[in-house]
Image 1: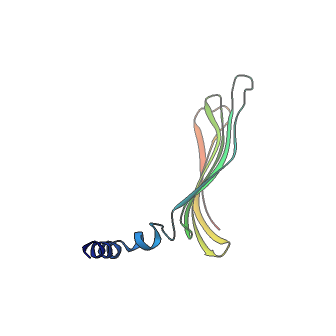
Image 2: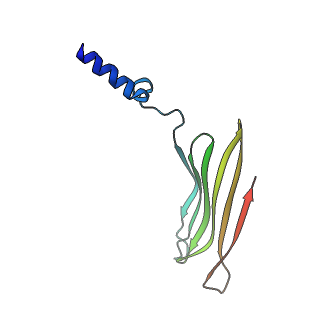
Image 3: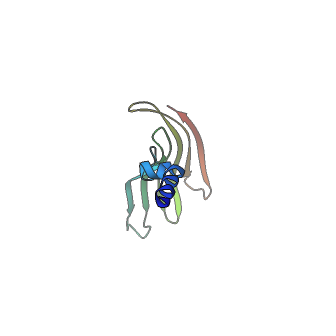
Length: 121
């Protein structure tokens, strides 16, 4: 009798563990897609080229990141970074708002220059 009372109290104290097995209905998920990641051996410069994107979040709200760029001769030639907030507004439809930063090297200059972008859509 005492064991069944302790068991009942345990079930009432931890309802999510007892009924759902500890599973969450809307878990945090993540995805990474690398479309291109190359290192070439050309004239000793060994350029590195990449293109990747991914997200982390739940069903309705996600943080997206996107990046692509080139690294040649120990310096970044062109880099694009994006950070986006995504919100599902209907089945198969979402709204994204975010910012983008472009870095590029002008010919003959050693300093990196760039531009900022903001977008929605």
